[in-house]
Length: 340
Image (cartoon, rainbow, N blue to C red):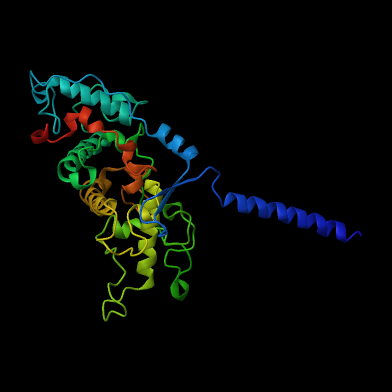
């Protein structure tokens, strides 16, 4: 009797832990499934109205100020060292400066980027970063319409009231053993970047900062030559998990469950995503990473590179950033001059 009671108590405790573990593995109801393709093919999107309400609340856009007049003196004739907004009217310039302050540094105000008492100075590194980011935003709106369409992007798309966007990444350091035992291939660490799976925990350096080939599936059985190792497939899978998590969708939002590799049978969002991957590479390589030399240590990753963009930087859990709100329509100052 004395032995049975502790065993029974231990069994109850283990059963309780098991129940907690199982419940944690499932999402709290009520999930809703929506058919996205032919019946019986697994072409289904799953959402949860409870989570959807939270996402809607997190993706509201601030009210736009009254439009500014385009007449009068150019801002460059009034202000010194104006390198990106000099072609705007003084009224337009004041309007976009106010909006950017609210989007990026609402707590610090103008001093978030400027030197107090000398707004023309470039001594604050944030001003130089902001200048390049404005050029990047205009570049995206002008040259990446295949991804952002006419909705476009603004500073708020990524920043959401923060000096640094909350969803960024940097090159992850190697973990694990060295020498002959170093064969983990950056796996089995359950990283948030890959949905807490055992997949390689840095899918970004290879595919969003370099021109890594994402296609790993052969178009023919037992194709001779050009064989891709399983490690490539695992890395690509990690990137796909990130995209699903970032957009709040599953695989069939882009792919056809019958033939994942077939473009002819894929959903239109797959083409949008194809352009998006290349857009992110473009901004990381040509706009963000070159700023590393002017960034302080707390604005760089553990390997010294700049904090860079991925799909979550803009999307933040929804398949259209800010639920598709066309903010750019209210801020023509962030379009290239030819498109205003």
